[in-house]
Image 1 (cartoon, rainbow, N blue to C red):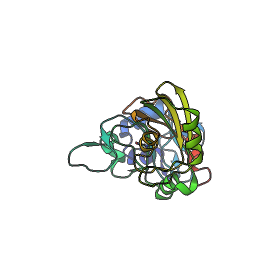
Image 2: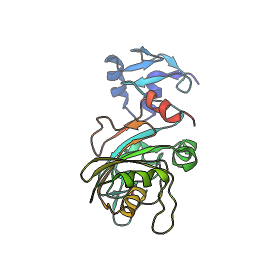
Image 3: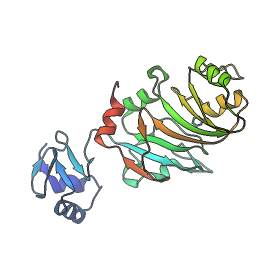
Length: 233
Ligand code: URA
């Protein structure tokens, strides 16, 4: 549906009407790759690529990346702890849900979306979406540990894990790549090999990385990142 560009943007709640005016004036808004300064221009937000500072404003769905700090639980409500939803800007808070979960003390990359199909795709072990973690731990990873991870560990309670990649980085430091998201997965895998984890950070999911996003901050994915994520979905 065609509508005025300035009105369409302010209707999202992303910017106020005067902020839209300023953004147009400053050349921060593009329509299909061309800077637009005329707020009265008629656009179709669903069909055209309208961006603010290079970030898509209107797309069918919202995908956010959080650099999660320790101390926040991954749930929408909690009687005791602060939740990751508190870190999501209010304008998105009621719309999106976390994609999978990170433990309260785990830091790093956590995605949020309102696209249920995408979330399901990313979470399902069937699709083997890789997640890369940096772990500090007790002990030192050996060649036998690397081999055990690559064969698929069987945890103490009988849980069978998919093959994973363990890369020793130095004494008490490893990178772990898993393609599923079982409860406390990395911590339990490392503990099963006598290397309890003392610090865990997710650095990457499905090829996306945190880049220079500061801890505790949230941003929308760029179009290029969204494409990476949707590949194969
Ligand atoms: N594995 C864990 O053990 N914890 C996390 O938060 C994520 C993966």
